[in-house]
Length: 346
Image 1: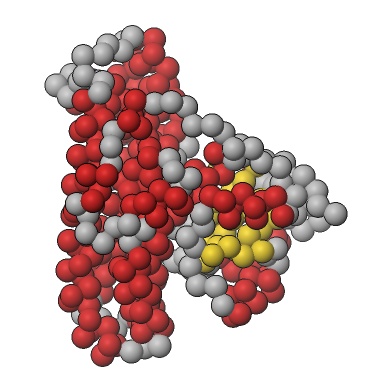
Image 2: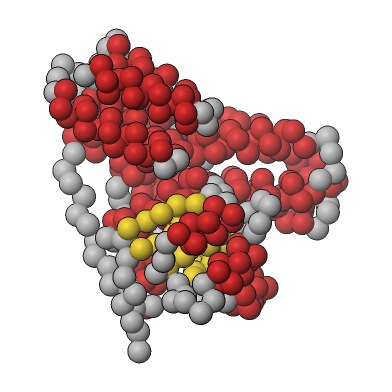
């Protein structure tokens, strides 16, 4: 007999775009969500809170999902044990057996789409409710022409994964731009070495990113190179990596341009609007909370929302750009200091 366990969920993935996709789906279904980007962070959070469900990525650096589950279940020994779903872009008998052996209740295959997530939760007795998307001028910005310029992107498929939400999909793409760049730089750093494990991890990460947004051709190539790395086929990697890196670079640059165009068009809709000090103060307070909790995705969304409300030449908007720069450098103390200055000036 299934049981309704509640609504507190922990999403664990070293890739922030994967975290955003899963968190967005869960929040739309009415769940409260915490996020972790490493196994150790997940363990620390599980010590502080009692989660009803944990979604655990398979391959992560330093501590993979299997070992993280083992440690979490050890921490919860004798207490209420959360349901745990393994999440992986590769679902075969070996992966399923590894998750099952360590204590996972089920396994989800990436990319996870909204309907599959909803049905899986219902299968395990979780009650869920789809939250209606609020009408927003932001979603009136047409993405057809913008994203059709990104060669290799099936944006309609990406939209379907996120239940058709333009705003959520564009937020995913914005996060993915940085993730693609980070993985690209990491691969470049180890190209002259024979660290096949490192290659496999970054090819795997890029595969997940491309699957999440509907870039299937690049996802397939990433998968092939990941398998070559796992099988120590360095000749295969070296023969294909130049063309692959060129494709990834071109795709990342085109995607970045599309996101910037969308952001610009979105800001135009707010042109001429004024923002009251009380409204701005409320949003800045919320931004400070996100920074204090190191919630990268929520910080990014809040900054985009705030800059969209302020005119580009506005001094406050310039300060927000400085906050964004600090966040990109993971200097949360500096970012918090800048936001506090803005709040005090109101």
